[in-house]
Image (cartoon, rainbow, N blue to C red; front, side):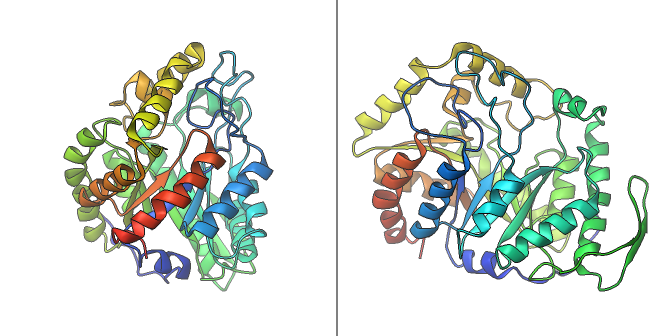
Length: 378
């Protein structure tokens, strides 16, 4: 494994690391967000709604917000709700959010192999980073869905080869951020002659994020990421996840240490929190009972197919709820769940909700104060 060079710190990330547990919010940029259910909610994928979520999260002390990228065909995943047919672009959304926020980190997902050139993202990323005063981050994904790749007139690249391509892409992008001179680059997949980006990112580079679980993906991620979004190898049940996550986190951090990197792992819980456990469980059941069966079937089938493996332990019902692990209960039980993930080696949580603004407000009022009491947040 190649050892990475020492990089300049990102002040916003260093500030977030003062907390025992990083706290992020998964933005609902797609219609239906993570849950193919018809149960009542106000969640909306539009910019105004996501801006409200982000401003609220910043006021509550969240460290980051994160936008998923998805390229959907007409009808999305189908069903009555046409699940995720509306899919807003996170790169453009975070550019808008930069003007509305002061402290919170803004992470955009980009499928870097879908026709992009490193110069595009070096330029666009540096611009958003300047707009946010050094708070922008890039979640670099390679893509695995054949239907998405074909939208761009491309063919699906073999799994491990995608990470070879990504390594070259990121290498050139980072040079364009850091090199004070014009860059000429002759790679196997990308070339550039006298390419130049100015102004540079505020900190000389931008926050880099990746979500990987395969050997090739993790080797790439530990060399090129500040944060690694992880999934539970045991599915969404919290106790099952807590049993296997210590080994999973240890494996990732051992790889990072070998590469000379200091990374943080972040997991994605779906939180259903109410004053009583009975109320929380009733909401969990309501989401399942009112699922859009056609959309749920298609959504589940998508993640069970293809050559990615990180989500395959989750059951169909777990996919209807959404998120990677489920934390359901009272504010005290939610904090206990976060502590369990922390004890299992996770450095952060990136939460998602069903009825976003209402659930987020309750989370801020009732859960975050208890997280502070528990020493998870400062």
